[in-house]
Image (cartoon, rainbow, N blue to C red; front, side):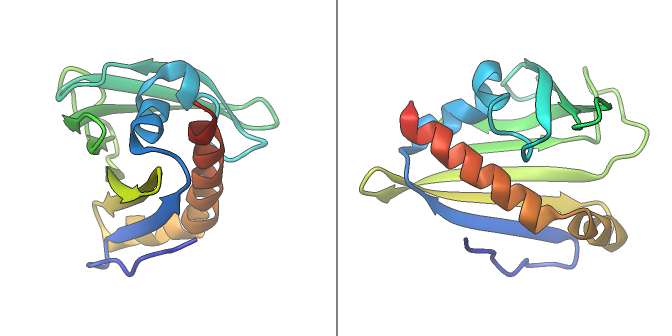
Length: 158
């Protein structure tokens, strides 16, 4: 696992070389049935996904804890470049409606690393340094790292 040094006190960054082609890694991010299989660290599961993958399109990912509690995560895509880049934020819920408490914007990039591999970078840019610190304490590196492992395993089989 590679964790890059963040360029600011509001960012967390995870970079990895995944043993899967970037088209498959991208598909696992945008196809709801695939996203459900890797998006949160087991034993948590994704119980529901709504994904309108286009700039301005809304998303809803509902994560379920092992105890059965559900956590809906609403957001809006800001930029979508097929097989290259996804930018989304929880600052909006749908149709540009502001959320009650924006937390972060995610910038996910997929680069060809040769040999059927993908350079995968996930950046979480937070509204405040305190939000970044909270996210780090919630287990960003461990959780997003475990999810990257799950993403790689799934994308390698597609």
